[in-house]
Length: 79
View: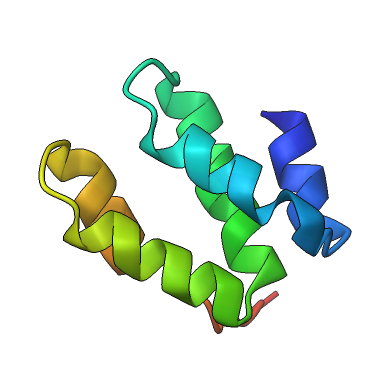
């Protein structure tokens, strides 16, 4: 989970594909899935937006669809 979050904090766009796979895999724990979505949100950009749109539109795991649809890519830190 920590590595997924760090990929986002450090804006490591080369990990977008791996984070998307973690987010969609039914075997991924909830904690790691949340971290993957956090990392994607922090990286942002077209690749993330396209990947989240794909996850949100895929039939199957409704929890993943919902989280993908609700992950704000233009996240602003309020603290």
